[in-house]
Length: 336
Ligand code: AHN
Ligand code: ZN
Image 1: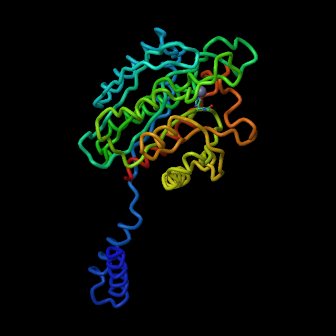
Image 2: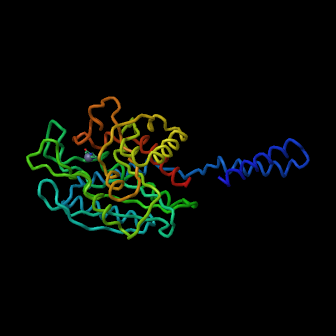
């Protein structure tokens, strides 16, 4: 309040001196200072959609990243190695959790930190595992999916943000953490022969929300990226994000629209869904939004037509969508 009054007084004094001519230079300079304080926008470095695309291709080339498989293990090693190459401090959480089908899953959450000493922090997240079956498909329902969009796209955008921050001369002022959650997509299918399991989705974020990678971990807020790579994707104001962190949705959508990505960041409300951000909000006590594709043309199914089907492969991935999301998130980071 006090600061606001001072700013108003300065603004008034600035304009007065400009018009009274006696000290135009001084008055002009003062006015610029006030205007800068109110409208200053930092330009973030360029997000490279070609690199992001290649990082998604690489993940898909490992094969489906299904927990307890060799492809899953190798992809985890690759993510850790990439993050170290991009200058992050990396911590790995190894844990086991039982899935709805009774299997004990060997899971790993991977946490990367930039500027780990900074008190002001933003937390980015994505899941790196993929669904073990294609339960929405007509064919080969028991076979695992590529998960180019559902899984690899969020990881690809985060890794490209990491590479960009590492390469940039100017770094964000805040600290940045990135969590790669495991076991997100091992949720119980709608029609399942097994007894109903509560909280069968998002195993990695459930674990992390109760066991943070550092004790007393705090972040100002978080942004989850899930299915952020499909051509012509629309991102709506998802219900759980709006319930816990409306201001952050507003901030990110404003950034996306300011940068020219109004075809992607839509001012449309969508129903609440369960995703990793649900547990980070409810159990982890950190407000987090979800940037997740919303199939606006078919309200019966929140997600796109390729969702949990074999069509979720590289053919659905678009560099334009990756650019819209990656550049928007980078812009938000550089303007904190
Ligand atoms: C549910 O279907 C309850 N949540 C979906 C979250 C999700 C699945 N994100 C990616 N795959
Ligand atoms: Zn999924």
